[in-house]
Amino acid sequence: MSEPSYMLMRDYPREERPRERLERYGVGTLSTAELLAIILHSGIKGVSVLQLAQTLLNRFNGLRNLAGATVQELGTVNGIGPAKACELHAAFELGKRLAISPDTPRPIITSPLDAVNLLMDELRYLKEEHFRVLLLDTRNQVIVNRDISVGSLNASIVHPRETFKAAISALAAAIIIVHNHPSGDPAPSTEDLSLTARLVKCGELVGIPVLDHLIIGDGRYLSLKEKGMM
Image (cartoon, rainbow, N blue to C red; front, side, top):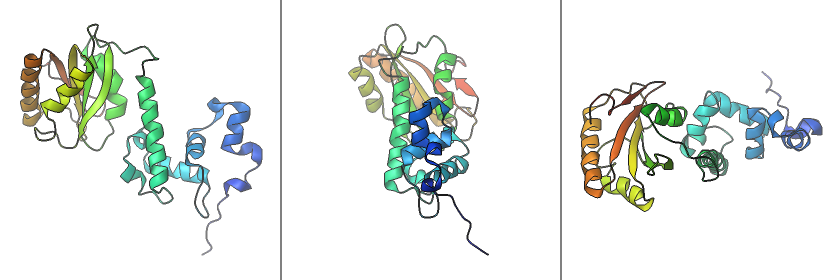
């Protein structure tokens, strides 16, 4: 059986190459694969950078899952070494930071659904539990949206010291804690409830109340505050 033939980027007409198309027609005309190809710079022997970009999208079932992949997971794709994996990870992180940068209006949290809408698309597909904190000012605007820990949610990983250190540094008036359940089911565990109670008590001591603990599932969420569980 003969080897499959792949069209390398140098074989494409110049006007069809992603970078040239961007310069000539604007970034909005490029496909997701073409944008990724520009970040990746080059393919591998026998595979063009555009084909490598499409392989990534196929492997992770779309851009959303790809953006949530770890450097290690990206590195499992043939042609994605440590350098390319880090470049992709950095690009996605910049996009996340831009969404909450001081140059854009800060999200205002007036209900659990406001926080869920802010985080659902980012957290629902992650394969590990991410413990996130939203730091709010006196008008309930989000000052900071950041991970405190990644991994199984327990008291040894999620320590009140780290949670409230960030809040104190940012001069937060209140916080909302959020974490995802990779199973997709947002029902709280005993550990979730125990940790919530501990953080609420710590918040009372330092004068930074915990307004809610949200658990994000796949398209579903649970607010411990709404359910009377805190």
